[in-house]
Image 1 (tube, rainbow, N blue to C red):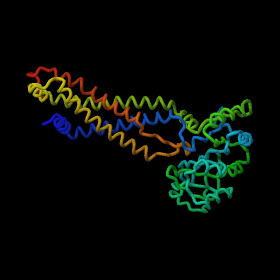
Image 2: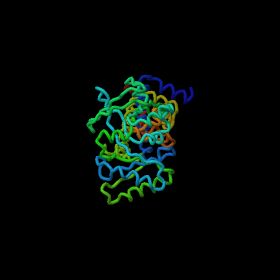
Image 3: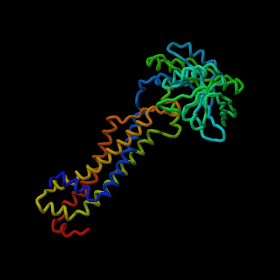
Image 4: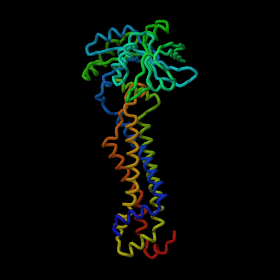
Length: 380
């Protein structure tokens, strides 16, 4: 029997325990990869998709403070601005269902520039643009509530204390996200009594080089105005909004550390039990001429086989998850492109190898130093 066969035989000798350990390591590595990849995505520079050209202009002090509509024309005259629209989030509810439907009001043409991946027939798109009370809905909501083109859809808002009677003129499909509702900003403004104060502005820059300059120019334009602005990329805005929940990166790092510690306990406990049960067997190997380092190598190989198998399963599960959520827009805005890249895979591999060695070498070394005569009499 070769040493590799001996390692495989010992790994499979207690199949249930090995399976449970591999599954535990897989779950832990799965969580570790998710937290690590998400943290890297947060720190990553803007991507190359069209969405990285979108800027969010909001009030500097609080999102509860509306901006004057007159800001739109002044922003539109700045060099590098391709399009600008007022926008309001609308916490929509439909019928007796209290489920929150992600919806927003903006200029009708802008939305198709912002979401070029939305697929709907040209006649539906034109009908939405031409009719002030028109609504475009994602396929998910249309299927859930049985909406059809031409239906009247009444959306109510607990925050705005208003109900909007809209006509469904378009149903879009997308490979990314189908959970948005969009309608005309002018219609919402009329329903609220024409205050002419949007919650924010969305801006499409012409090129990536225009983005940093526009962020400075817009805020400088309204410095010392009645309502000063804060201009951010859409990714920065979404992350700053999530930061209201706490320090996101610190949370991810803390959970990752807890996951690593959990893996260490799981594998260490399994290997310690296995080595203790095989004390007499290890003594036989030593009596047959195996050196201490050879015994340690066999036990380390067993631990590595278990840890690496779990790590491979965990990474595979994380890759499947990232593939399924690829392009999903957080809050209907920022697309997520979290990837299982080389640094994340390297981290998972390093953690798996380190933990397998740390959990094995100490108990294995102790077992290999026990007097052979005493070890042969060991009965567990």
